[in-house]
Amino acid sequence: MSNNIPVIPAVSVAVVRGERVLLVKRAHAPSKGLYAFPGGKVEPGETLEDAARRELFEETQLCAADLRPLIEIHIEGAPEGHPVDYRLTVFGARHDGGEAVASDDAETAAFYTLAEMRALPLADAVLVTAERLLGLPQND
Image (cartoon, rainbow, N blue to C red; front, side, top):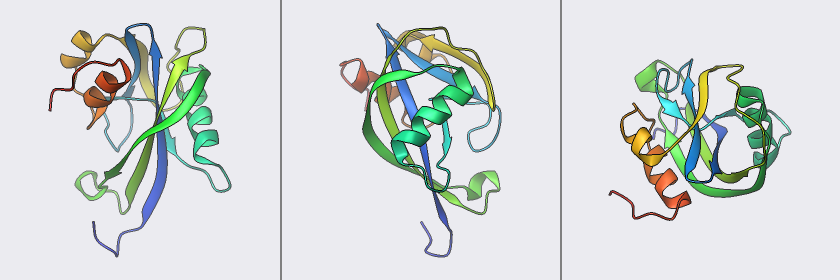
């Protein structure tokens, strides 16, 4: 990480419903074409949790319960032509009802089992985070 590159705060939300985890297919960079947890940039004046709730609703039309921060990930923007890096805080949450509807910059939105996730092109740390949320051994 270079000190000359601005770092933008971002959030994503890993929502669990039974033995499935919510993923969206990213329609835009960073991570375009990859499956990831719904999320995006934190707006000025927003808390991380407020941003997580907003992004989840904007991309999937869902609300979630029991949001809690899980991990923080540094995403370099340069490989995808972005002049900034991102500090991504991933939240875990419980499904609070309703069906996911892809909106905003999500191409698709659905709940996946770990077996289904292993066959998808995933963004960094998605599988290990899902395994942690579901209480399974991690494949490190």
